[in-house]
Amino acid sequence: MNKYKKLRKEINISQAQLAEMLGVSQTAVSQWETDKNYPDVNTLKTLAEIFCVSTDYLLGMDASRIREVNEVVVYTRIPAGVDWGNNIDRDGTEEIPGRLLAKGRDYVGYKIVDKNLSPIFEEGDVLIIELTDHCENGDLAMVQVSGYDAQVRYVFHTTQGILIQSVVAGHQDMFFPTAHKEKPRIIGVIRELRRLFG
Image 1 (spheres, rainbow, N blue to C red):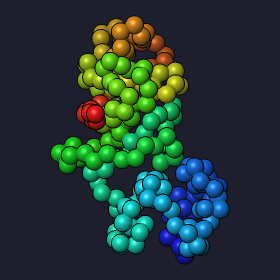
Image 2: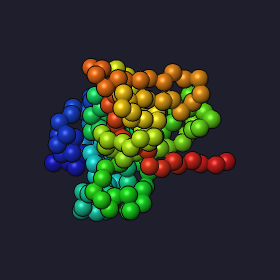
Image 3: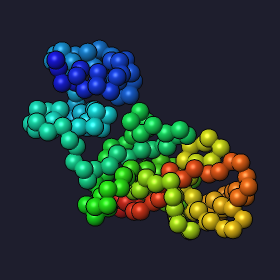
């Protein structure tokens, strides 16, 4: 069985679903699966992310299916009820230092795609996030509230509850009393900022 077809079936998606995730036609996917054509370099990278394999494996240059462990997928949006494997809001990968992975923790990247967090963060910045549902007082974290997409916020724990504070002056802060039924969901803590200059 063709490698692309085998990997697609392993993650239980149709040709049409894969085509939609990649922004290509179903015919293109069909041609890859019958060796009549091959994906371009950018599409190959995205396929590797979707299938959780290395690009070398897809190209037949490496028998190992394991992607480099020091690479994390970068997302442009973290929706409510996120399912990392099926989140199509991806924007490549970032390498992270081995010291971050030494303790067996999981990480993702989050790319700032607008100016809403300016001047603290700029469009194009990539935040490296340690996936955890716990954060320390004053940590900068990815937080979901009321079923909305996750946002970058400071988190403060008080005896009365949790304060979710905006990183930008003038944006609304939110306070959740200890007895309050609704609680913010911590997705992860921001550990690094990557910024390109020029």
